View 1: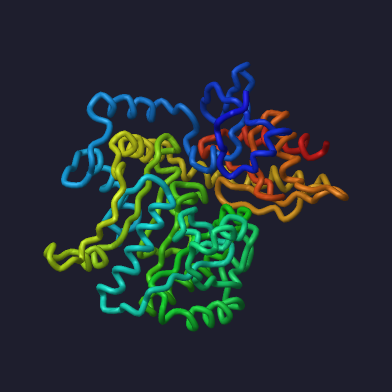
View 2: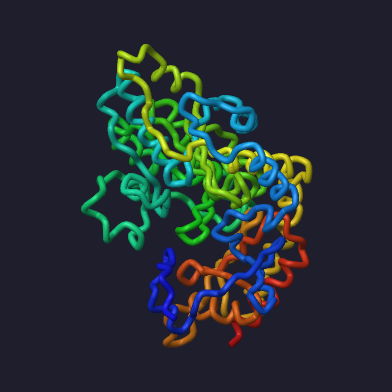
Amino acid sequence: MASHVWHPCTQMKDHETYPPLPIARAKGSYLYDPEGRAYIDGTSSWWCKSLGHAHPALVEALKDQADHFEHVMLANTTNSVIESLSDKLSQLCPSLNKVSYASDGSCAVEIALKMAVHGQALAGRPHKTAFMGIAGSYHGETALTMSVSDLGLYKKPYASLMHSYPILQGIPYVKNTDDPLWHDALSHWPGIEAQLEEHGPHVAALILEPILQGAAGMLIYSADALKRIHDWCKKNNVWLIADEIMTGFGRTGKALACEHAGIEPDFLCLSKGLTSGYLPISAMITRDDIYDLFYDDYETGKAFLHSHTHTGNALAARVALATLEVIEESKLYETVQKNAPKAAKLMQDIADESEYLHNVRSIGGMVAADIIPRENQTRAGFTFAKEARKNGALLRPLGNTLYWLPPLNSPMSLWEELQNITKKSLCV
């Protein structure tokens, strides 16, 4: 019988030759089909399963909260769970201590964008109504978040719905943190600065994915370039929005990717790993002085009236608290940093030993490389994904970019298993 499910981010006709993988259960870094065959969850189920599947502490937290209450609207109520989570999140950046909640990453970014243009007006800068993104960026799939993104595949069909905002070009990319450009991007700075100076007077906020751009093909850029952009924004009343939906909570080896550049943004957006993918929740965190712009008598009309039905959902908030506790107790970030060179070498070895991969790049718990298509081969990444699944891994290349992004608590033996599956799947 034909399925009634319209799968996300999929050309449904592909299911004629590559039907969806049926999942019966999941545990740790593995998925299991109804026959009990195991598959490595090599993408952390779209980059969110930082602690893997069925982690006992998260399961217990979910059950415990369900015994108390599952959801009560956060408007005009509060509870100890959301208060505790907000306290924890306010410790990520010393200057950011006001937390607003939504249900998904796109909506957290939308909150930051709306708050930025509204806040600039309240601060006496009503001419600052534009945004600026950076080349290769992806921030979600609402009309506004697509407007500040730079991936035509996702936004081109909907151009009539969107504003046209400037996109910062010339960001220097690196393969890893040993690249000289990681520490010194001065040679690229004049071109970047010229663009900032051109558009800055009308820009309310500049938005970026710090250090690692996921949807663009797992591209890594210079920490020094990020620091320079941040410093320029500070001097020119342009607020910086850090979209850490994917990078937050350890994917780059630190709690936040911003830490690589030693910066704190004006708005921080989080989701995905916040609950280790157990339940949808997102957070946008900002500073006291921005919060104070909206703080006044109701009659002034200054209140920020953005809302979501499931804002602050108690089940998700309780699992988020448990996730942060497990991360802290297990010293997860230190483990990611320790394993990062070994994981990168596994991919580099494939590139060195075969003619099928090049441009290996890595940071923290992410390793990527580009597949070299065979003669007359189309959709090399798609072909690889089909072979990888036959060999026991669910991987979803970005075009011809193959990447490994398993749960952050995966043992090194799992990375080695990914290497073996990748070799076998490339060599068909």
